[in-house]
Length: 194
Image (cartoon, rainbow, N blue to C red; front, top):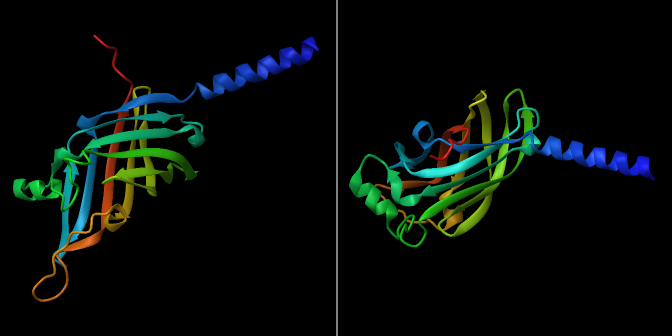
């Protein structure tokens, strides 16, 4: 009985040690970029980004199953290099920032991880609607200080109740429905509080 208890304790301690290997890093907003692109006037793509966001990345270089990430984006920090357009995007026609001031993402799993690439799955909440999405994920680098990733994804804005559009005089619509999401994430060890 004593040997059985000792073996059980050893297994529990080993499991705790393994679980503790995932390091928690904070997303560095200065060296990260959360962008978006959408088709405009049936011609090209307009791009923008969010300048204010925060989040964490739990990362274990040996086991992608232990990874987790959370991010919160301030909708009012939207920047398309055009103040009038930014104001319209914050209005009830689009994000309705007064009612839905944040966009949030919480990962649920990583799949297909091989040679520094895989898929990051998670819950994406925008405009009061939460949907499952998957992002193509690529590891850019890792050091003792942090980790960096590139991620790419696509959503249909109509799935989140953002349906505003304008019919063009000569046919077609002003805006596409698919929104590309290009992300560059750098996450670093938390700095000691002063």
